[in-house]
Amino acid sequence: MSTPRILPPGTEIVLASHNRGKLTEFAQLLQGSGVSIVSAADLGLPEPDETADSFAGNAAIKALAAALATGKPALSDDSGFCVGALNGDPGIYSARWGGPQRDFNMAMQRVHDEVGTATDRSAWFVCALSLAWPDGHVDTFKGRCDGTLSWPPRGDHGHGYDPIFQPEGETRTFAEMDGAEKNDISHRARALALFRAACLPTG
Image 1 (cartoon, rainbow, N blue to C red):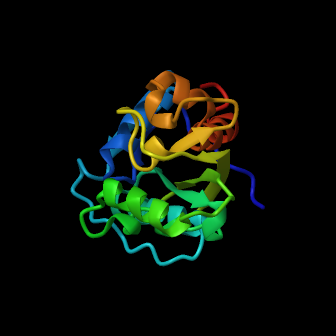
Image 2: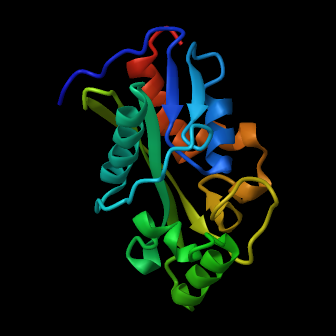
């Protein structure tokens, strides 16, 4: 494994995401890091096809596409919701379970319907975070948050599957926690902490 590259203070990086919920989270999580962010959506970049069979592979695809298109370092995550009773599904297909419109109310209902009466209520969120450079170098960091599947959906915060996920040690779902509380324990926060330690040692 290659040594992670350090981002110099003041570097502008491209956040390779069109998901506004993720953009908000990353803005909060990277406060005070010494780098600035411009989003792929703001730059009008297309979303590449996610053709890999893993979170890390898809994160790298998105980050590399943005880095090559802009000539800047690019950061991307691929994250998803995994359910024990569904053998880890929806997993890398989490967004696709919401259909073309990415309707997560529909996606959460599908999870509930497919789990049915299964006694296994384990669930977890996974995040693979990739930093890609225009020369093709990629560093990837992984985070995971375990918990249980909750039904019916609860809470108005967060995004995606947050209303049906109750993290370990909590009685609330992610969607019932404010952004700062969630960012202390989330899969994305854990991956980003590894990224910051490796690539932003002065941040």
